[in-house]
Image 1 (tube, rainbow, N blue to C red):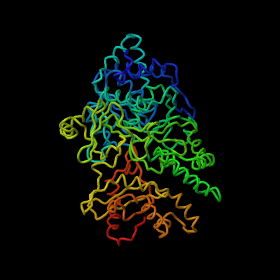
Image 2 (cartoon, rainbow, N blue to C red; image 1 turned 60 degrees about the vertical axis):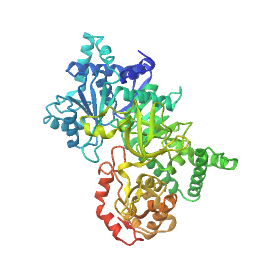
Image 3 (cartoon, helix red, strand yellow; image 1 turned 90 degrees about the vertical axis):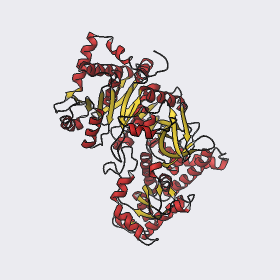
Image 4 (spheres, rainbow, N blue to C red; image 1 turned 120 degrees about the vertical axis):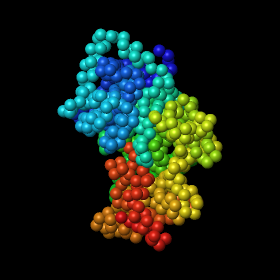
Length: 603
C-alpha cells in the first residue's frame, strides 16, 4: 500500500494500520459513553461490506443512507465504498416525497435507515422497483432487514473466503464514483453531485497538509449532518490524522457534550456560534451591578485586542495588560464552557459575523473560517492557525486553483472538483466554463495577501428598482455584529431600497428594557415599543456605516419567531432559504414598502 492514499478505501485502511489500537469513535448508549478503536471499526466495516456482497450488491450499485448522525452511518458509508458501491446520503430532515425522488433518480438498490425512517422507507419501496433492500441500522419492529443479519452473513463469507474483503476494497480506483450527494433543493428539483474517490481523497489530504495540526492527538466533537459534504469530509480527515471522534447526542445537547468530551477541535456553522455567543451575552447582561459593567468592559477590551491581533499590529503594553485582566474575569469562563481544551473551531456554510469572530479570538478560541461547496468536495480555501484573517475565508488551499471571473464569480479547478451532476447533461454544460473552470455561483475576490473574500451568492444578489446591486449576505453579516440581533434576512429585489427582517436577541432586549426601565408584559410589547424599535434601527445604522447609501437597510421588520429548519426557512446547514422566507412574510414586506419612510413594522 502506498503511503499516499488515492482512494477512500486506502485512506481508511491506512489510518487503521497506523492507529489500530487507538480510540476512534465515541458515542452514548443508554446515557453512558462507549467507544470503538480503529481496529474494531475496521472489523465492523469488513463484516458489513461482506454482508452487502453476500446479498448481491455489486460495484457501481447505489446504496442510500437515510439516518441521523450515528456511528452506523459511517459504517454504512465505509462498508458500501469497500465493495465499490456508490452511496447516496439523505438528510434526516427531508420529506418523504424528496426521499422518494432521490431514491428513484439514483436508482438505489438498497437503503440503510435508522429506526425512525423504517416505516417511511417501506412505504416508498413499494413504488420503487429498483429498491430491493431496506436495511435497519438499529432495533425496529418493522419488516426490514436488520443490519445484524448482514453482519452475520459477512462473518460467514469471511470464514469461507478470508481474502475476499481485501481483494474487493483494493479494487477501487481513484476515478471510481464514490457518492452522489443531492443538493437540498431549495429551488427546483435536487441535483445529484457525483464525487469520485479522487475528489474526496485529494481534498482530505490537501486539507490535512494545509491545516497542519501537528502530532498532538486531536479529540473532535461532531454534530453537523454527515449527509452534508462538510462534516463527512471532516470525518475522513479526522480518521486520516488519527483523531478521536465523539458524536453529540443531538444538536440540543452540544453544549452539554462539549463539557463531557472536552474536545480540542470542532466544526460548526455560524448559527451555532451565534447561539453560544447569545447565551454568553445573556448571562453577562443578567448579572447585577457591577458584574454587568465589568462584562461589557471586558468585551470592549477583547474586541480592541482582537482587532489589533487580527491585523498583525502591535498590541501595546496597556491593552495587553487590560486583556489579561479581561481574560481572568470573563474570557476564561468562555473556554471552560466549551470544555477548556478547544484549540480551533472551523466554521463553514455561511458568513460569520465579525463581532463573534473577534470575541472568540479574544477568548483564545480562534474560529477558522473556510469555504467550499458540495461540488468541490468541499474545501476551496481555509484560514489556518498561522494565517487567520477575520472577514475572509482564508487563502486558497494547496492543490486547488481559484480564478475570479469578470463579473466577480469565483471559478475553481482541481482534483477536488466533481465529476458532474448525475443524469443532468444540460446542467453539467452550464456548470463549467469552456476551458474547464467550475462556476461556483459565489461572488468574491482575493485580497492583496491572497485571502479569499466571499461577498454573496450570484443568484442571491438583490437588484433594486433603481438598478443597484446589493449583496445581502454582506449586509446581514454586518447587522449580525450587533448583540441585539439574533437572525437577519435582507430583502429588496425589484424594490426601491433594501430592508431587513430581524429576529432580535430577546434576552438582550429584556436586559436593555430592565436597565432603561421599559415596562412590558409579553415579547410583542417589547417588539412594538418605539424605544426598542429605535434601538434596533440605531444598531443597524451603527454596524453598516461602511456600506454605500444604497446598500443600507432603510427599514426593518422585527419578528418574534426564529427561522428554523422545521419551518423550512433554514437549510439543514442553517442557511436561510430566502425564497421561502420572502414568501412567508410577503404581505408584511409589502406593507413595509407601502408605509412612510420612517415607520417600522413589528410582529
